[in-house]
Image 1 (cartoon, rainbow, N blue to C red):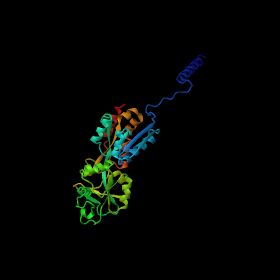
Image 2 (tube, rainbow, N blue to C red):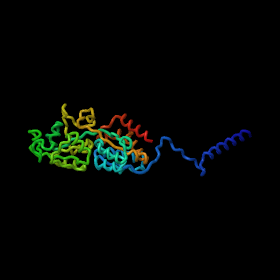
Image 3 (cartoon, one colour):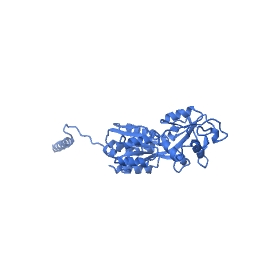
Image 4 (cartoon, rainbow, N blue to C red):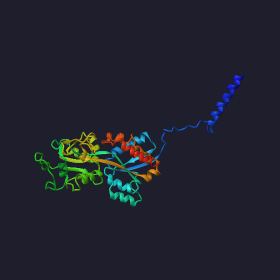
Amino acid sequence: MKKLLVLGLSLCLVFTAVACGNGSNGEAEATPKASEAPKLEGNVIIDGSGTVYPLMAAIAEEYMTGVQKDVSVQVSRAGSSAGFKKFIAGETDFSDASRKIKDSEITELKDKGYEFGTDVLEFKMALDGLTIVINKNNTWAQEMTREEIINMYISGTYNSEDKVMWSDIRPEWPNEEVKFFGPNENHGTYEFFWEVILGKQDLVKTATLEQEYSTLVDLVSKEKNAIAFFGFGYYVSNTDKLTAVKVDFGSGPVEPTLATIGETLPYAGFTRPVFTYLNVKYALDKPQVLDYAKYVVSPEGALKLAGEKGFAPLPASEYAAYAAQLENLD
């Protein structure tokens, strides 16, 4: 009898404890796991570099499908310069660029009340190799020196400002006119090529400059005498249509690959960093913007996806430093 009374009392205590742990409707309240990220919603607006676009778009897709399904990350590609104009005007959260921000753009940001380095942060995304491409049927110019590439793209180098012949570059090459192509002035790739590679000398007058990289790929693939320049990622996506010129920087021809592109690697002469810039004020006001910024520099972001999109990733320690910088914003 005593055993039955003890058992009954124990059961009462159990039922009382369970009841105390229930909500007002009698159902147990779920306790969220500490490892689960809070669910976010809203938009993240990104514009800028067409070169960076494939990488940033891939990161955005991974984020929206695997991390925050209610956040819409909108990535556009107006070009680095055009993107900075929107960023300075406060129209975007991030501005992608295939060149560093200019002093004049930093001044414009300051005039708008943004202090560079505090209200605007710069993140290096990866390394790109500026790639010179030719038509698949071009069998003579598959290897060129850095100087030959520069000279052929500079107006007047061969005393013929209206046109350049392949035979002007090397006498044994065809006496046919070179058809020059490249991205237009909206793009950081154009600015990098003109400022860094050509030393701000005028491009050959017959060069056709385009807004869309897909247009450049199409033009070069259809013109035997064509030559163009753009980021390595666009070449990698079109190796069936184009040939990449091996560039001799002084120690023999170097093919652009993920193994040669780097600031201390054989293709260093045409290697450049690509960037994204974050509006910190927006990141602090909109949790989804800060969360996405952290994902970009996480191991699942640029570090993982850069190689897949034709970029050489940075050392993991550099992304980790950016991540720590963002954690300090909370």
